[in-house]
Every structure is written in C-alpha cells, then in structure tokens.
Length: 367
Image (cartoon, rainbow, N blue to C red; front, side, top):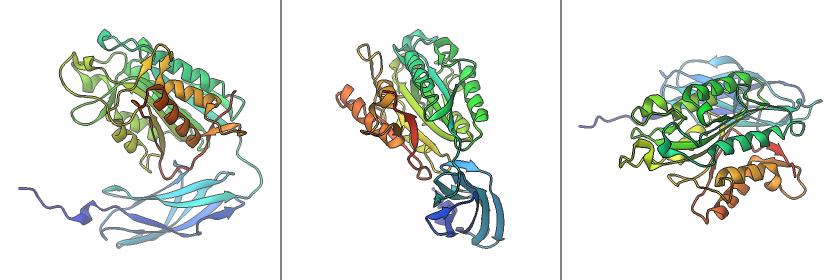
C-alpha cells in the first residue's frame, strides 16, 4: 500500500525582494536588499543565499522576522563595478525554491579589471579497454585548450590551463587525475568575475540507477560505479567554483562499454544538463547531443562534430557581423546550426543556462 504524502511536505520556500525594486541603479558597491520568504510550514528551517550572475557570494543576513511561516530579513552584499543580476534563493528541507531576481545597473566610477579564464580539458580516445576507443576525443581536448590560450590579451587578461597538464589526454586522464584537475579549478577560481571552463570529451553512459557517468582512461567495465566519474561528483566540483562556470561535454557511447552485454546505457544528456543548470548551481552547460542521441566524429572533420563547431564558433564564426566578441547565446546558435548541418540533422546539441545567469561575453573574435 502506498503511503500518502502531503503536498506541503514537498513545497519549497517562495522568496520576494521587497526593496529595492527591479531594476535598480547603483553608483557604490554596497547594496542592502530587503526580502521576505513564504514557507510551507511555520516549523520549516530556512537558509537564504545570495548569488551574483549565478555565483554564490558572501552576504550578511540580518533576520528581521525569524519565526512562523513568513520570514523577512536584510541582505548586505558587495556588488561588482558592472551591470549584474542578483538572485536570492531560499532553502528548506525540500531544497531550493525559485530565485528572486534583481537587475543592477552600475552607474558608478570605474570598472572591474579584465577577466582571468581558467581551463580544464579532458579527452580520451584510447582507453585501457581497447574495445571502446575513439578517434578524436584527445585531439578535441587539445584543440579546445589551444583555442582558449589564444584568448589571452583580448577579453581575458590571462588564460590559465591546468598546470599539471594543459589538457589531460588518453592515459593521462585517469579517474584520479581528472578529479585532481577538477579540485584544482574549484580552488583556483575565487573571483566572481572570472570564468572557469571545463571540457570533457570521450565516452559517457547512464547506469541503471539513472546517473550519468564519464569514463576515464582506466575505467573498469566490471566496476563501473567505482571507476567512472558520476554526475554527482562532477556537479559537486563545478558548483563550488567561485566564478562563472561553463561546462562543455562531448561524450559518445559504445556498446562495448560493458563487454558487449545487451544493456542500453546511452547517456541521458538532457537530464544531466538540466540538473547542472538548476538555479542554485549556476552552471551554463553545452552538451554535444540531445537526450540519448549519439555524438559523431569523422576523419573529414578531424574532430567530433560538436568540438569542431565549438572551436569554429569561439574563434569567430559565431560572432554577429561587426561585433568583436562572442556571447553565450551567439555560441549556442552557431553550434546548434553547425552540428545539425555537419550531421544531416542526426545530432542536435543542447545548451542549458540557469535563470540566475544573464547572457555574457565568453570569447573575443580571433579571425
């Protein structure tokens, strides 16, 4: 017999920003905002978080009303010297509610210094398990890093790839090495204005427990859970990055992953992308294909279709006429069109962006 569950036990906080009203113009960096929260139950716990452009920031929370089903408080935060979107998110035992947004227009003196771009790129073509090898995944990672490094001195003052290996390729890309690289970028990025890009190319799968998993070089088909990198691990590292974060993943699937056993484990990309782009995570996601479609690579492209389109777009093909930079939406449009064209419509990339993140420039045109 199924036990009935009350609707109230599933509900999350509803937050409103009462003051200032949206949008607001500011000429100094100190911002105080008054919020109110409606809770499903007077007994609910409440945690309130502030984000700037999808990045969690320190906020002094002075609670004015801290009992009952309606709470209120004042958040004091420091805003950047640029236009920004402030989001306030309330959490109870059921998770994060829908964020309340405030758009801030910077009218003061000065601007933020040029950005720094941090990059981790991983690609595995040749696996320890030779049944599942690819042709261009390792080259995809190397090409992505080369493109990122070429952005230094333009939109970004500096571009910093992972110091241990500019890109982790083939036998370098063990599970431990990939987790070390993710740990590095999580700790390295501390300025909310800076940008982190993480790129994965290789094989991916969804296990019967419905979790996406990336296959490192040394994965073991007999110990999938122990030797792959799960969606939860990736999400944990990515959400803790202290700046803007963009996650690119170009993952294929091979029926040989489990030694030819007849199980459909094609990765469900849409589910994973939507989990990552949840407002509380603040991650912009570009994935090579939709749902359980297979990602393609061909000798004539010298890359996977997605990475070929991605590198072309970031180099300048995605830029609008007369505009020297490429935004997230510019790149989304170009990659979508280009991959569909290359694959005759058999592969459709997906981009997912949290509502707490506004479109922003991510690359300068190079050609």
